Image (cartoon, rainbow over all chains, first blue to last red):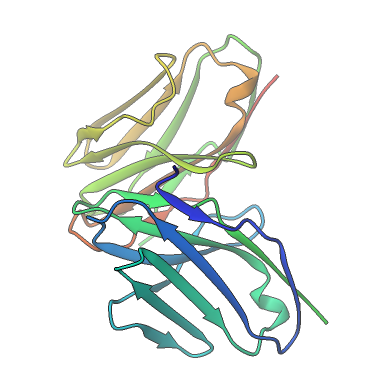
Length: 109
Length: 114
C-alpha cells in the first residue's frame, strides 16, 4: 500500500462548481499535513497546511480526520485558474515529507 | 531570497554518460530533499539531508545514484551511468529543518537520457 494515496482524476468541472478531493495516508504516526498545487511544468508550491481543527483560506477548505487517516480539500466557486494538479503531502515526526501522486483538476468555462 | 536554485534546468545526455544535478538550498534551511517526478510514479523522495548529513536514502533507486551535501549551501545528485529510464524531472527542496514545516521547491531539472 502506498504511503499517501490520491485519486489521480482528472476532475473536469465547470466554473463556479464545488469540487472535493480526498487523500488517505497509511502511517498513523504522521504529524503534519499539507496540500500543494502544481501547475504544468512547474514546481509544487504550498497551497495550505491542514490542521486538526480544519482550516479555511478563502474558497479553499482543508479537513483532517486522524481516526480514518484521510485529508480532504474542498474548492468552492471554481475558477479557470484553479486548473492544476493538487498534491496531498504527509509528514512524519521528522521533516520528511511524502507526496501523493496528485489529483488533476480541469475547470472549464 | 532567491529561493532554491537548481542547475541545469534542462539536460539531455546519452545513455551511459554521467549526469550531475546541482542544488543550492534557501539560506538558513537545514534540510534538503531530492525528489524525482515521472508521469507513472508521481513525486518520489530519493534522499534527504539534515545539517548536511544524509538521513534517509531509502528512495534512491540503485547504486547508479549518489548524492552529496558537502556544505550547507550546496548539494549534488549524480547518476552514473545514466539510462533512458532515468528520464524525469528532478526537484530539489529545502525547509528549515523543524517539524511540521513546508518544503520549498526549486524549479527542477528536466533530464532526458537518450
